[in-house]
Length: 130
Picture (cartoon, rainbow, N blue to C red):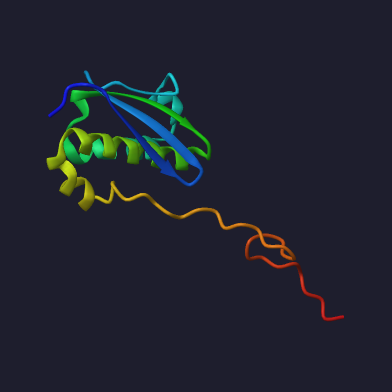
């Protein structure tokens, strides 16, 4: 077990989160704002805190996050992955529990690009027979 800060990166959709995990009392700041003000909905807050819920390590570490890009759901997923990776780098024995909860897998789903001659990625323009 290491006691210094651990810096990891989490990604989801178009979001990139740089997570700094340091020994502390359990505070979590995102872009210099507390978790409650950055993510006002409980669903997103629970998504961010899921690695701590699985491992029961919430009171042992302070988390500072810089996140950019994407929307709120993508940012929450990126932060979740970054926290899980940081916990594994500190405590290798937590890997099976986090892996079983699906927290160490980077979600590869991205927005499909728009194709030429179409309205969106898959939607076509209206067809007119006459």
